[in-house]
Image (tube, rainbow, N blue to C red):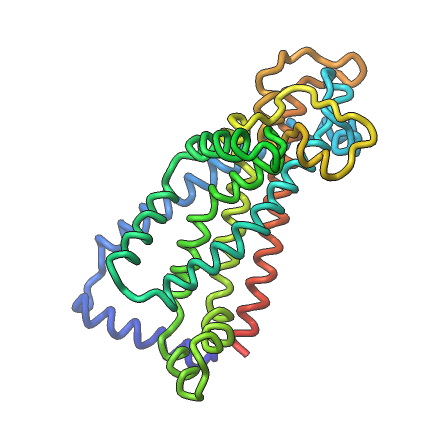
Length: 321
């Protein structure tokens, strides 16, 4: 592998020298420097924002400990917690995984491997790309009309079921596009090898195409889940609770799924509008709690991304073996 890499690098150097006539590519160097500057600027901005949020959130975890994660919403910064928001966000993520993942991956594979090139196929692909750029608030209106009002006997109206299905539809076009692009990037030689040994289209897709495309598909799907976890506009339209969420004791799982709900983005939105009156015991304000809630949401997203990276590395190792 090392010898092959050195040969490739030397060949690239020879080709580059032949194309440039042995002269320095000044325009290329300036362009690369501008790209590096943009990257460093973006990283610096993100680092400053993250540092500001984390430093403001640390006192919350020091004074409240695990109580901040296990307590329900309350009107006092001394008692308020994010347990209900964590539960709502995890349920929404579960709906995205259960609904959007299989449907989106299957649709992407069908469009690339099975659908014949035609005007109808091109029309479907064009509409899927257009749907991926539709503002999230439009999906919130769709969820309000269809899942909250029309399907209220099933979803329970303004419930986490309606929210989960709505956000699954929100990220479905992204998953389809990511899957299609990953499958399209698979070398045609793999398909020809599968067909050459007598494999059917399904066997070739299952044993050759999907394992090779799995890293890209996993990356795209996890990014879609991260977007679903951070969306607030659709949840506000569907009716997520921004204030205190009272849960009657003795609720069954079905009743809780069809009852009122909240999620981490909604908690962050609600606390941002609260009056920053310090608590009598801890001296914390809702602004401090808001920073801690942002950190919790970031950790949830990072955990999902870490899981995707581990799975992607596993598939890449299997592909290289």
